[in-house]
Image 1 (tube, rainbow, N blue to C red):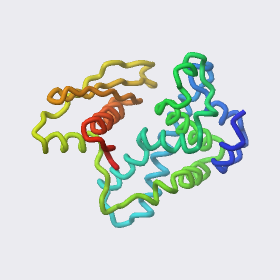
Image 2: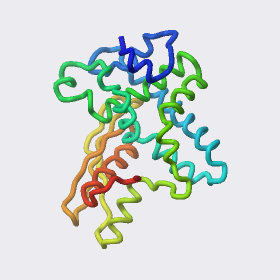
Image 3: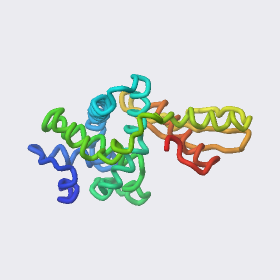
Image 4: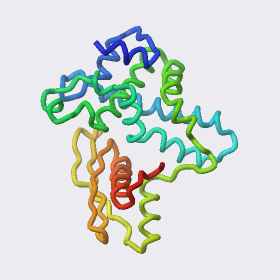
Length: 227
């Protein structure tokens, strides 16, 4: 049973509490895991955040809305929020994942948070999920500055390198796991001129590339892309 503290922070009472239990179950633990709920939650999150920023910022164009949304729903932001909620402490993991520190792995806690959003949607509908998402994302939404929409990590890295006359990075898929509809990608971002190679993981190649780029930018500049 998930902790009372987590349920209180979500501010939502499940009619079917088994959905929350499933949302917090990693595939390493049992066959009834959270990947299908995460699939639903990803779409619910994107829609809820799209509506929130559409209503908050009526003057900014579609392209800027897309960039703002991308920054709010990316894996780094999800992992940060999941850690704030202490989601990792409630996730059920297999012994191997537990030993390797899975309760604090960004991809695991981020996916679990999306699965929670999917579980709330299936339990109570879109309005219920949207209310929870907007409440949890309150600080992040308040921090959005529409006058300076955030660029994605690949763009930030490329511009930083070009300004220093360093060749643009190469992105190479090094590993693909899972079935076709639930694949996980591992991508290397290689900056040959600086002898830097970083890894990114994600449910799509694009997400993995963005995470690898963000890690590379942090490596070469000492800053975080998109902040």
